[in-house]
Amino acid sequence: MKACLFAFVALLAAPSFAQQSVPDIPFESVPDFFKLPAGMNFGEVPGVAVDSKGNIYVFTRSNSANGPAFGAAAAQLFEFGPRGDYLREIGKGLYAWSEAHSVRIDRNDNIWAIDKGSDMVIRFNQAGRVTWVFGRKQESADGAEPLGHPNPPLPPQEGRFRQPTDVAWDSEGNIYITDGYVNSRVAKFDKNGDWESSFGDPGAEPGQFRLPHAIVIDRNNNLYVGDRSNRRIQVFDTKGKFQRMFSIDVPPVPGTKAVNGATPTGNALAGVIGAPNSICITPGPNQVLFVGESTFPGRIFKVSLDGKVLGAIGRSGRNLGQFSGAHQLACPSENELYVAETSNWRVQKLILHPQAPSSSTKR
Image (cartoon, rainbow, N blue to C red; front, side, top):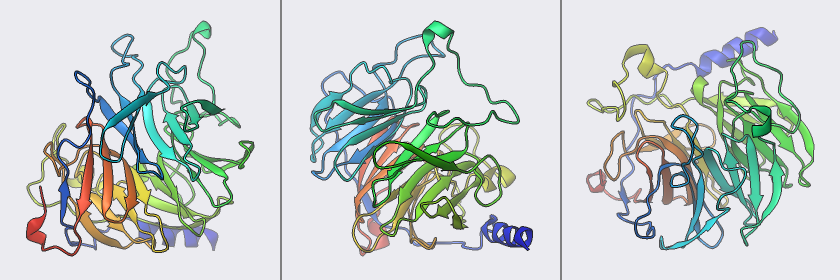
């Protein structure tokens, strides 16, 4: 019976592309919003977050890129004011900086940086001081080298990570870290930072992952995990019990081109449509999700908590209002959205106009 149930759920989540079209959400992308100091540029931008004061944190693979061509350290964490004015760099030259992946702000305005390259998650206070460290990177004295991907994979270790990706918190302050490119699980720590448990392993069955890349938690403590390579979002309770899952099955607008490489078709296209590269969840009593695809078709979707796609934003491209590598989203309100892009080396601030005529959409 259990196997039949899993098969039925998997069938429901399979890419059927039954939802053929959704409304475009009119929006504008604010030009030149972030004011970097003269001579400074972002590199790839995998992370963006907003605190309770409206300050914006950008985690970028940029000017700290030092080292050999195929092993450079690339991570800087910048803070900007609500109007995009540059305020400071946090953690300059930090031991954990290797390859920036994502940044989140908790309810106490602590700043959490997830570094994929060093396998570490760092918590800063508002003064920019390190207060907690999760994970440990390989020491150079021991001949550190990139992690391998053996098949079957090595078993995960408590309290350590292999290329972590994101972090979220429940209403009790418990911590959930998606871990990640190698371990394919969610690690749970209690509010004091002590290891508690983990759930998930590699695979395609419900409750398994093929790259858990993003995680958010709603007001009712449901965990939404972006299972990117399985092209689905899985929902769990705080004990790691699988609840349900859904996929985004909206074909791209005809004529959309990929920014990097050949434009996917056929099975390759079916494998990337709606793949959840990034997720944010709005505050307040009536929450919605925003979900970003990767480099192609490059859209952002507004999604209800039950998985219904409410609208689409943008498409793949290099210009304002287009996206490539929407790696992290921040949504301080339902009509304000920040999009961190790896392929386009930028963060866009979007203002949504859901009641405006569709002809006003800026592309």
